Each structure stands twice: as structure tokens, then as C-alpha cells.
Image 1 (cartoon, rainbow, N blue to C red):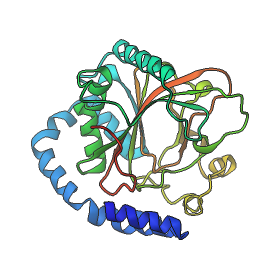
Image 2: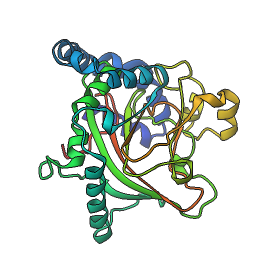
Image 3: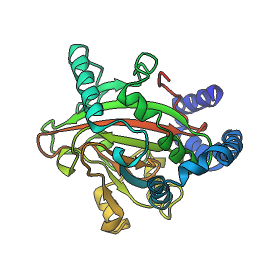
Length: 290
């Protein structure tokens, strides 16, 4: 993957990023790079996964992900998850640490980063966030969705907030994540999230397994955001899912599909963790301190 990443960075430098991505995502990545992980998954599933997948809530999430690219559940519905109170307590400790020693905002002024792939799992192996990230139900869902052994590649803990801006910026606009054709972002809510404090939105069926993966792909190939009018003219309103939820809600999104989030039309915070599962073909290297 280091050599592939080097080729990708070279393509970026010479202005061939988008043609490289088209070939990589559609023709190479899952045929070659992920082959061994698919074989490992088949062996692992025959021994371990079946019992996990028999659990009703795990099946519901997997079915919705396959059909829509989007699913929602709650920590109370999955086995061996930490409690909402434990998760909120740890979030508050992370917030205190952030106030004492802030992370860079990396150009997104609407996001405060409490964890930016720098969580110390070795020191905090029994913490609420560690138990969430390593939960076997989440791993089984990701493995079944990818049909291969996935990688945990990123963990963020964010506080997005109202900035007074009236126009959307950056990832608040409709887009697809470009680094692989299939990936899984898992959002955990520490507090209630609604349309008024940054809830994400997703176009059901716009993921790789859906019926609209090619719709508006030209926007990704030219590096531009899809507009609201384009989304509304191409998709029925009932396909646009708004990821509202109370504390403890878990939202799954294949962000190779069309999505946006983090826009705050009025004062208020969105307190979330974002765990990413990827395939071996993901062009972004893992940054987690596993």
C-alpha cells in the first residue's frame, strides 16, 4: 500500500488525481488488493461471525447498510457496549484536556477536535471509548458489509458548533469520500443530534451496492461538490436520510455514497465520535494508535 499511496501522491502532483481514482476505485482495488482479506473473511466467518450475525439488531444494521448504505442503532441494542453515562463522562474528560491543549482545526473552523487519531488505546484499554471501538458487534457488521476483514483506520472525537455562517462550507456540502469506493463511517452521539445542531444527511442507495452509485459521479471526478438542486432533481425526498438521534445513537454510513453534515443553522454543539472501517485498498493510510 505504500507504493500505491506513492503513485497516488505522484498523480496528485501532476494533475492526474481524478483519472487515477477512476481506475483505482472501479477496476483495481477490490480485485487485487483485497483478495487475501476476502479469503480470510470467509474462513473467519465460518468459525466466528455466524453467531454474531444471528443477533437481530446486528442483522437489521447489516440489511439496512446493504440496501441503503445507511443504518442506525443504539449502544443499548448491541451486546457489550459501554453505557451512555460512561461515554459521556469520558467525553467530558477529553473536552477538559482539549481546552488545556487544543488540536489544530485544519481549516474547518466549525469543528473542535478532541481526539484526532491520537487516542492512547494502550493506556486506556478499559475505557468507554476503547470498549466502543473494539466492540465485536461493530467489527462483525463491518466485516459482513465489506465481505472481507476490515481495518480500523481512524478515530475522531469532535465538537462541531455554530459559527454564525449562513452558507455551507467544505464537508457541509454534498460529496462522496474519494479514497475508496466502499468504506464505513460509524458515528457515536454523546448528546442529542438534530438538524439544528449539525446532523448528517445521506442519500439512500447512492453507495457502491446501491442503485445510484454512478449518479453525480462526475462531480467527484471534477473535484466539485454536488448542489442542493442537483440532489433534489435526481433523488426523491424520502431517499434523503437525516441522522437525528439521542445520546448513545450509532449511525453507520458508507461515505462512498452522497452525504453531508456539520452545518449548524443556530447556536448549539454536536458531540460525536467518528470511527472509520476501511478495506486494504483505502488510499488513506491508517493513523490510529491501535
